[in-house]
Length: 187
Image (cartoon, rainbow, N blue to C red; front, side, top):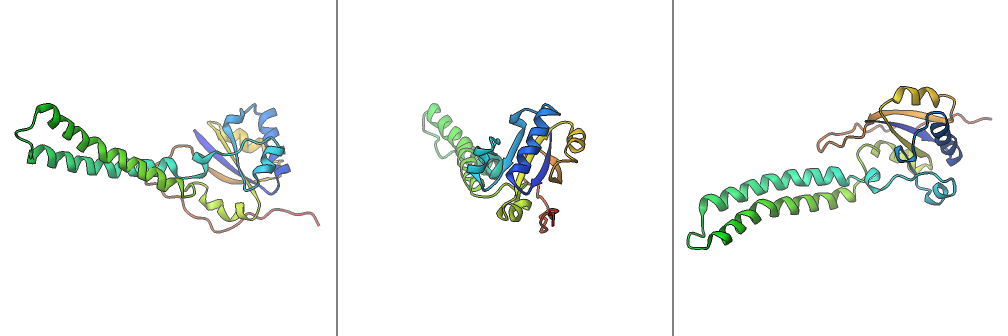
């Protein structure tokens, strides 16, 4: 599934954009998320706020932690299986030690990675950090048909900031864009 990013200068502009998505394209609320520093304004305009999975790197951190945990668990499992420091121990205890050596690092790696990711901004919206601090609002639209969405929102007061995927890959890096959106202001 693809994700389209739109930047709105005001919540009223975001509200109009979401209304067009609902009325013309019949896109459900669960596929539209707004990232904003104005949580009260989002509630006042009845806009669907992005959750912590959209805002943080929780999933990506957990994926990275699980990969590190997998390497550590393979290493510990091989050491435990081949060194056999427990020749005289019962088979059930031996199996428990091998089981713990295999799953313990996976659990710890996934948990630590998820906690680290929770404190980092999502790598896909990181490029909009400056715009969000300036008070703009980022609209995330998830759909398989991004072309009709772009065409329907041409007349809306938002800036098309590109598209991406909803798929979160552990080692994908998003290029940072240091420019801010320039909105047309009437004189």
